[in-house]
Length: 159
Ligand code: MG
Image (tube, rainbow, N blue to C red):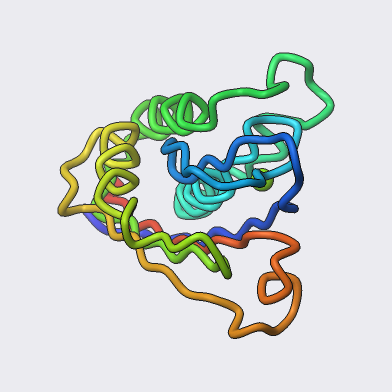
């Protein structure tokens, strides 16, 4: 058995009238993320990291934003579908590390809930998932509060 790793990146715009959902957790805030699905930027980065490690393409190939089935889709549900796909290909999740890059609100108070929610969808323990937070230090689209970005690295076992 050997291990493989993959990276994921995503960003979404912050707009009025949408919920802010990070890793399946609704974060109280006056704006939320725009997108075809629920726009869970963190779950999307994790999906791409998993697909990357498995060599199975990217989130847009599996869940096109032109497909009405995925309008306002629960992205943790998409994450569960990807885990089922990977399991079928003989992959197992060793660890997922993530960073949310957002000016505000603070991720800290929600970190444990996000970690638990991601771990549940991944089918692993919370010790196999890490959630870090960073800001844009006032620079760029993150710093101006125009959007949120997320990064993820997934490590998988392969047969
Ligand atoms: Mg996305």
